[in-house]
Image (cartoon, rainbow, N blue to C red; front, side):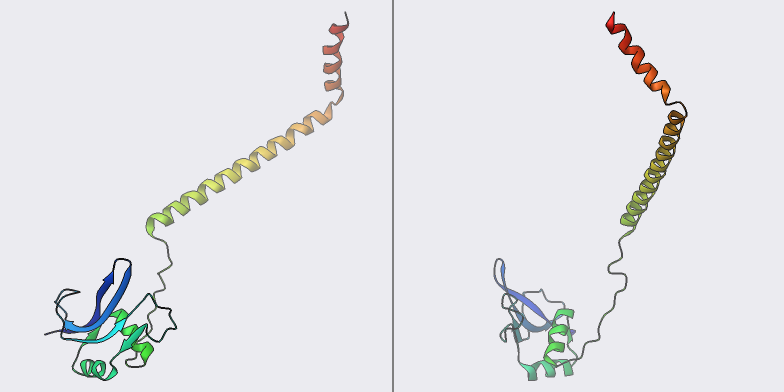
Length: 152
């Protein structure tokens, strides 16, 4: 029989309260268990002494006969100094997924195209005033000719 030390949920809706139990690993989460070895109340503050309570000698006994704690219970046991837990490292945790990477590449490509278009527009607008600067009197002549017929 494979034995696990895990949490069994109790409490009301949105007010969780957990028992730390030793149970057959195949039994349901809130089903029958062999022994209750502690409690966990996540509603309490993290520095509260009653947040996690353990019967230390019984936990040590069950660990000695081969019971395997779940990850959450292993964290609690490590914090209590009962069982050392190796730190986990997942360097890919913050890396975005494939579709998010594709979207980022598309966005970068569109931004590059927009930047190229802006440079091209700026270059063409820089050439237009240079053409007007060669013959500045032409614009004044057009303005005067449009005002002249209004006098008559």
